[in-house]
Amino acid sequence: MAEGGAQGGETLLFLTDEQLRKGIEAMFFAYRAFTSDPDKILENHSYGRAHHRALHFINRQPGLTVSSLLTVLGVTKQSLNRVLRTLIEDGLVQNRVGKKDKRERHLYLTDIGEALERELSEAQRNRMRDAYRTAGPQAVAGFRQVLDAMMDGELQRQFKTIKDAP
Amino acid sequence: MAEGGAQGGETLLFLTDEQLRKGIEAMFFAYRAFTSDPDKILENHSYGRAHHRALHFINRQPGLTVSSLLTVLGVTKQSLNRVLRTLIEDGLVQNRVGKKDKRERHLYLTDIGEALERELSEAQRNRMRDAYRTAGPQAVAGFRQVLDAMMDGELQRQFKTIKDAP
DNA sequence: AGCTTATGTCAGTCATGTTGACTTTCCAAG
DNA sequence: CTTGGAAAGTCAACATGACTGACATAAGCT
Image (cartoon, rainbow over all chains, first blue to last red; front, side, top):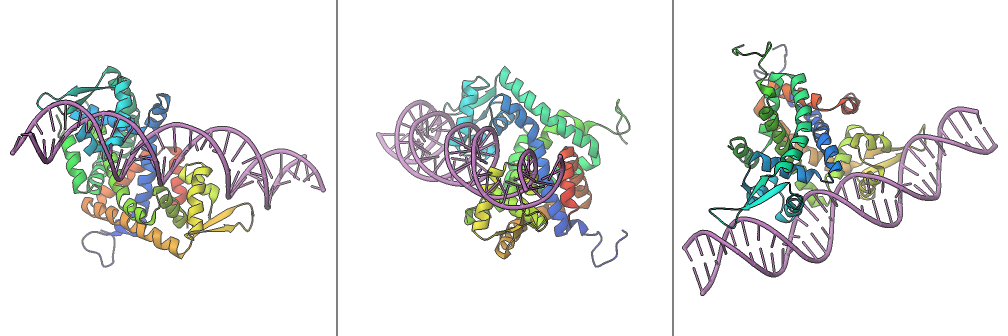
């Protein structure tokens, strides 16, 4: 530690308002960049970001129910339904009646659904990979730690469910 | 280094598709949490996220011109204008004619504009501070490195302008 | 049989983005 | 000094993706 001053064992300069504001701006700009590549692709298919999100989570958890997807996405069923309906009509998503509980609908990607999901996520992973490679493994670990800490308890629980999904 | 295998000096396990997908999801959930606190406050004032963004950047760079703000926000002038008009009408933002170039309008926050900006950014900074504190300075450095690397060249330049602003 | 849950739908509203066209004001170069 | 272009503002129309509220159907549960 090269700092003097009244702090404890570690310097707390990373907690100044100025540093926090810079972090806030970095989140804004990075998130915009992060969504820009899929957005370009989606335009060609006349879909929106909402479709991407649905495809993403159905791909992550094939067979998840509509209500689970609602919870994960944090939107109303009316909002999701519009998106889901077009995806099903266009044959990207399949809707199977639950075996145990026949009220439930389990969602799966079809082959063309998977193809689009792959195209979208590939663009996004490419950017993420470049960023990870540039920053290095140590930085990536920190990145993940901060993001995890940024979600409140509710979100962390949801996220964990997905992380641990089969 | 404890790893064997065919990688170079460092293990590349942090670049697997699975790790990248987890990073993508973390960005999604963290960003949603990140915007949730200001969003709640904005509801009470019948403003939206777009108003928050305008207030934020005007606060960061008092006197910036409309076209600079347009560039930073990356939206059309028609879209910004609707937001800016209400903010000016409501007396949160002031619009001064440029001294050198009278075509330009320089934007400033009024006292009540500053008050709202402070309220919004305080909520956001609180979350960011908690996350930073939880994760620690090392992690924060990594977080910033990854975010910076995630923006493309265009964005990094814009961001730098703001970082270096007086 | 009756209550609840899961899903789906219709209708209306709102916030925020877009494009295109046009005006006013003003700077700057010919 | 005129003219072309830049900065700002506005009107109109439209798309997306949120929201609320109301309602319908099917199926599970008590």
